[in-house]
Image (cartoon, rainbow, N blue to C red; front, top):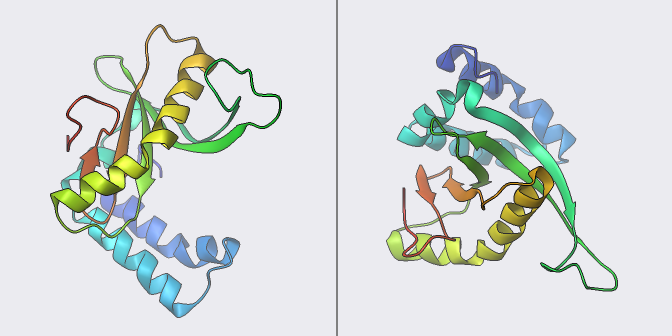
Length: 163
């Protein structure tokens, strides 16, 4: 996504790229394309899309690969956590945030909360990776962006809910 571009033009460019992106993922079926278009349409119609399109220079990294020990103290003999941070940004106040995109089908607040809770361990790992990798004094915020509904959930915060 080119945040310097006009949002409707960039959305059209991304839509045109869908067949190539799906081909690289090995998901070239008409059903996969229709589903990808449904997700993109839902996201584009949401207030979350407006937020995303206006991020501009707040975007620090996209698709940032991470590798870290499996536990906080790194004492495990073998293993590790491998992942990709979908989006890393700094908000207008300068606070760090890790965003993970989700395309889950969720209907209602209870389902949204249940899905968000499932992703909390992933969020803790991603927060640790960014905090440790950048030597941050405090944990970055972790947000799940549910693209189908335009909802944002912060599962690691007290009384986590939409934001």
